[in-house]
Length: 594
Image 1 (tube, rainbow, N blue to C red):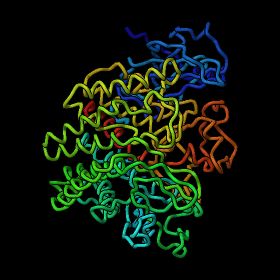
Image 2 (image 1 turned 90 degrees about the vertical axis):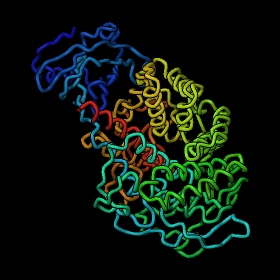
Image 3 (image 1 turned 120 degrees about the vertical axis):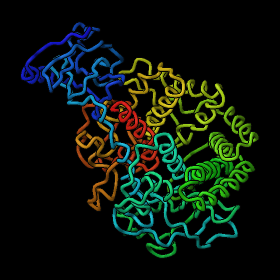
Image 4 (image 1 turned 45 degrees about the vertical axis):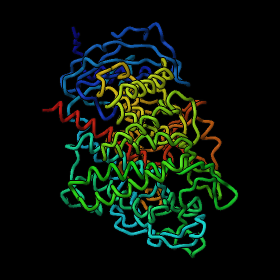
């Protein structure tokens, strides 16, 4: 039975500064009525005699009614340095719609909402960033860029050949373009649409300009990527992997003004690297490629999935995609191994070294397209070679070492075999075990792009729970989701402008924002990293005083600062990966509101 306490809201305000060094972190988007609900309190000084499992000291205050409810329970957890104590506050019993805050030990949390509508429309926000990342014609900037792309390099007898590869998306806040991240972005958006088709709006046309065209905007965006991928496969035996290289970093401004000279005069052609089964790089730095399957497998799965979803929208386009998927599958199958991106003047590149996950998904999509049991058998065989995505449960990883961060091939096969349900569960269990009794229930390794790992974990947990009805991981699922919306040491929401009035990145590592003075919206930033990573990166620093210094520790850091490209740079593929998560949350809100 709930206990209600009527206390003047002014009384909470009077006591709010008694323990000024305490902080309560809540999901700033809010909570659906049926959500598992938890907040985290950081205490500067340990007060176990006051905090220990005594939920009477923790009140959930309804601002609309002035009525207070005792928290369901609390739990002391491992401390987060430099705070001496952390407490998880549970309040799932709060289901009435309204605006609330938590009061505990003289500290007020930020206000938050409980309601069916808290995620409505949130799924459209990432698409704003995707449109802003478009290369070629950019609807957000009303300008064109990189119209001369490009010339083949490291392509044997084709070296120096001109190829038309205009289009696609810039990868992050620089202007490089990669097949591996773009293909994943395409697949993620197609998947988000397939799983939640009714929540997507049609407010923009195929060019990304305002105005409906009869196609959901998320499919327009995915098609923009697919059309570029077709250009990146100009011949049956030629698959292209990357446009530009780290010489791109010599320019910082809006993309239409890009004047980098790659050897063909300033602002002209950029180098285009083919997929390679051997290590390569133009200068002293080389990658460690071993095959083509990781990249060409991604071509295949995205083409096959696109063919299926566009069949009734544009049959001719669908047929082209289906034909390209079939060819890509044959090439990928004949060339096992991982195809990495190309370093240039610096030793940085995407160090992907797994590939059977890409082939599992490609085979599963080919099976969906054809019904050929041989493809199903191949998908199962590939899936058995990597039952759990290797980062899950790991403490660290090289940059994009195991990519994509979620294996949706397991989800495809889980509908066919309980073996792959168990594989999904095993990965979740490893992350949950690593989280242990941590305050934020986070078992994610804080490597570069940790937010992408977080989205992958939440997505897999949601898919598993909905597939099986098993709720054993729901606390870890919601903790990782809430981490993205402010339940983290810094109280920081990790998607720019989501929620609109939340504490979201205000100084992202983006030349469009910083130099062009053009606001950006919807991008998921990289997220916290180990201090050891931050301290090791070339050229990294802070431009301004660290306003989150109070919450940094010797192990993990996050900075809302333009100069920190390791934690505060939005990425295109990470942003695309949020579309399923936000689409599902918006769909859940719609269902609960009916």
